[in-house]
Length: 89
Image (tube, rainbow, N blue to C red):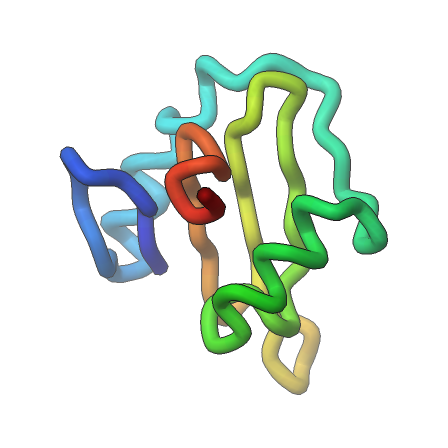
């Protein structure tokens, strides 16, 4: 579990991440989970270990939420960012 940001957090435990989900409270909807969007394609290409198999959503104001599922279709990894552009130049 990770929050992608210069000022916060890095890798977190599941309990720590749950306590930080308010990180997304400022995001403006709707969220776009289109797997064929250029943003998603570029994130998966640039960071295959973190985003290659992830379900990625981007809010109207560029917040990012990404989820990877394990073989039981349970969330195994979560990544959050206040702006996907910190990951893509």
